[in-house]
Image (tube, rainbow over all chains, first blue to last red; front, side):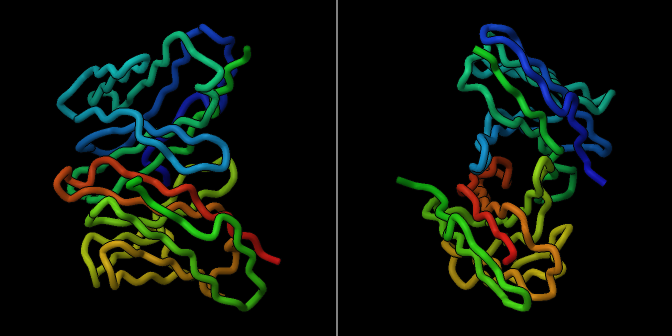
Amino acid sequence: SQQGEEDPQALSIQEGENATMNCSYKTSINNLQWYRQNSGRGLVHLILIRSNEREKHSGRLRVTLDTSKKSSSLLITASRAADTASYFCATQIQGAQKLVFGQGTRLTINP
Amino acid sequence: DGGITQSPKYLFRKEGQNVTLSCEQNLNHDAMYWYRQDPGQGLRLIYYSQIVNDFQKGDIAEGYSVSREKKESFPLTVTSAQKNPTAFYLCASSDWDRGYEKLFFGSGTQLSVL
């Protein structure tokens, strides 16, 4: 079964609004990462948060991690049409050298 | 430009045929990975390699084979034993010095069955 479960599966908002997507996982992790995928393309790394961190920022991105609830959220502020993409969380499980990906959230920004 | 190159972008397989997907990187990364993505789904790990001449099975290795003869190259062969090969295949690499944390991806190969 998938380590990461993302919510919602799809999200459609107006340009300029904030977008929030969530990721839950099952086992202890070293870090959690978020990636973006434009249609038919490879994934691009956005941000990494380690298990001992609670919040991280990068430009218009804000990631939080709650290890007690085994969950993370990605907030994109002041959304733009170019943010339209699928967003995936990925967890590096403790003791493993590989990432496990969630099923993704498809984000659509309407002009 | 440094990066990962996957080829071809589109590939068609006839029944009973083996096909090979190419993945080359010039990032000098030690680790390389192959993922499979089905429509609307996340990525599932097929094989990965942390060092030349060594590789490990991922979660869905059956029907696939790989080799790692050079640091820069990690080709994936989809064999005739893989009965449902239609999917988007993604190659990635990561850096040992960074604990394999951040993955760099190629642009993918779409494999379809004729």
